[in-house]
Length: 168
Image 1: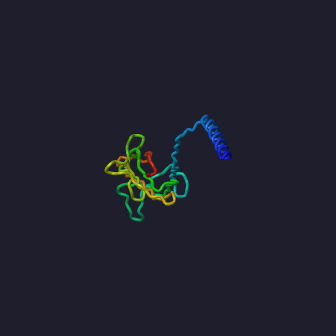
Image 2 (image 1 turned 120 degrees about the vertical axis):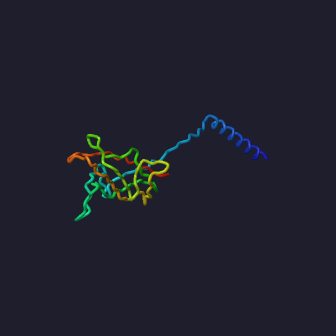
Image 3 (image 1 turned 45 degrees about the vertical axis):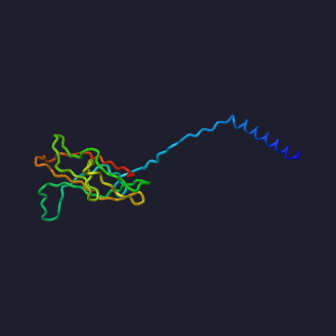
């Protein structure tokens, strides 16, 4: 009986001494959040940067007359978004081709895989593209029509403000 009482007293002493030490420490829960970003790239299909495009007069072969003076460019591009399953592509500003006098090419159009890329509205939402293993190769087509009053040698230029974002 004395051994049980002695063991109980020793145990009680150890517990109370542990409590004394625990009372001097502090526990604090801190919430930490990290948002993983997706790195999105848009390049030519061969991996080269897509920085500049020159539209050329459309030629349909022998006997073809380009009556409407259509200028165009077609090439494959690759969109990569590691960790994403789908991306949305749209224009943030209206696309136009203008010369130094303010004369514009008519009906400039940008398309990816036959979907017209434009500023999204409720009636015409932005185009979405599925990625396979974080990437997709798409056909980029840009075309516009030369104005009637175009002067030979005039240079028409513009910037296509393409936005590519991950669909969550």
